[in-house]
Image (cartoon, rainbow, N blue to C red; front, top):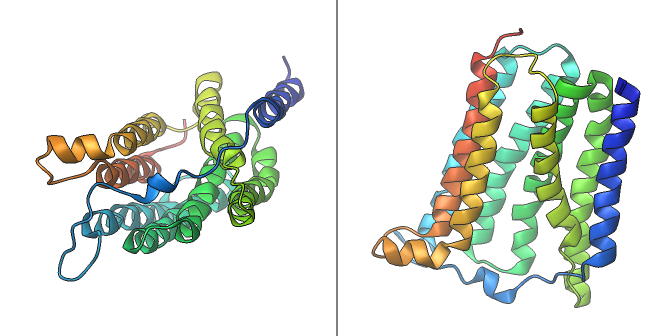
Length: 252
């Protein structure tokens, strides 16, 4: 299959998955119990201290990645642009997630999820440019980011209207990561240290498992550390793997 045919096939799969989920899956409202995290301990007057302070991992990884963008190797300026947006979004996630965890509720959760959606889309655009087509990755960066922002805005609007719908946001998160994995498997790496991508995906997968085991982790650790705090650190470790990759990699 030639390059144009492959890109059309990728687009068809992506659009088909969206239509299938939106057509077959009922709207998913935000579970009100989501905000009841296991570790609610305060520290020096700071509420929910562990879940708030564990966001420093995102700040550190984001700053490392931003610096790596200035020194890393890129074949085209558009690649650097996508990576800078990704790490800026990670830094914003540190602030948004900390703000949310100070007093968890649905209105604050918007500011946690919004920069995350931007980061997912920026990563996908960076990989499209690196592995499939440089110009296409550059052209898709802002439309993909707009799609990510729209998915969070749609969920927030439907929650305000009394019938929350998380489907679009879930697709932005999980379909973008599945597409990223497929691009990594399908195309040869133009740079060294591509293992950083897989470390990042593994870190995020472990982070999601820790999130679902929030209370279990808290109980097993003797109420010292919760699964949600671990989620923040594991996801930040995944971002740090990307920053390390950009710092070390060289063109092949």
